Image (spheres, rainbow, N blue to C red):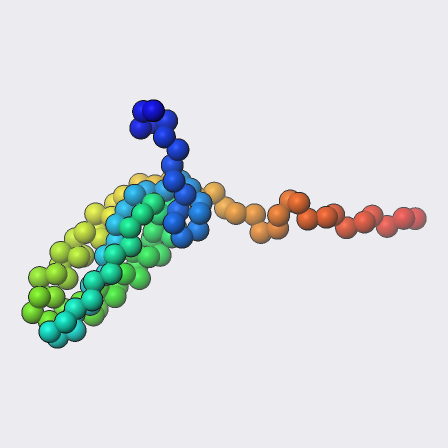
Length: 111
């Protein structure tokens, strides 16, 4: 099966498609310790952009506290910028209908 014919995976957060394979990072320096979180997987554009905003903003504000973090934070921000380009190239996900079509219709009044 060629890569063009392979089915795209659904988003790991909302189960919709189309998706991009992107890896997002979040880094927090804590003096001598640090915390690094990674979100991998196929992500739709909307979920990916929400996660990108949250993780990048957290890294930009709280990532600098520590000696190792002075190097890790800029690297994390660059990696997230690369993931942002992948997410922005992903087509917009079609809207999900608010009411499912299988709900029963109201009875028409008899005259």
